[in-house]
Image (tube, helix red, strand yellow):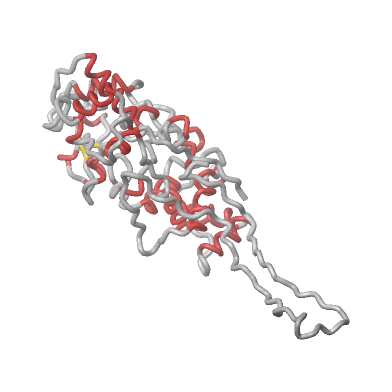
Length: 369
């Protein structure tokens, strides 16, 4: 069973055992006497699997003080993540944009929201979001809790920020959820805040480690093929990929509390400035951040086509060529971007190396109330 997504039960279980002594009419002699039977009982067992262990190559996950991670909360968030009843029209769940077959990234170039509404950006890989200081491509959310409310009230789930309480009240009418919420959030029950907290708790368990690269770094030199090792040498050398896709997360966005955003020219070719996605500039209200986007993680990248914030490149080798060639020239292009003069063979070696970052786990659909 996958480490990151156990199946959760809904009914509480209490197990008690007692040893019961027998008796008869004959009073035993002193030699026949046996120690009196002692009633014993086992403590109630949790119906929820334990919080998954942090896989090799990753640091412990830090949850906020006001939303500690517990097995019951993770179980609840897991259900909510897969439940389409959270959306405005019952058509979309969080999982709809982060499915296994797409490496937990988006299937379409740009996400499709509730009511089949096309959105403007590609759904990113959800593995290791627990470590991100800034969420969304433009970094406008500072926590998973805030991001959950944003996606729920925004176009993804289509509920609307002013209707979250109404939708929470609908969820509260589902008996299974009502019981679980009062178990996990005693005295609070079902609310927009507790729903977002449960979702965030589950997402903090979606960890991608123990990849072939992690094993190689831990000393298993057979974990990477010869071609992958050549690709790794290019990645940290001639190709310069590591400058922005910094290990171990393979993104510098994880390394600073302010995140990291870069203009590589994606989405600017043939467009006037006013017609292009402003990226980070809209969130920061700083024009210097125009067309800058969060550096995406490369973990699971071989499974998560299409690529970039607009899903504009369909194949991994084409995405590598674009980046290794310096992106698209524009006035705000990051100075780290330049033509690395890579051969087709070197591009293939880089692509082979990226395959070593494939996440070993998958998300498992739970039973819903």
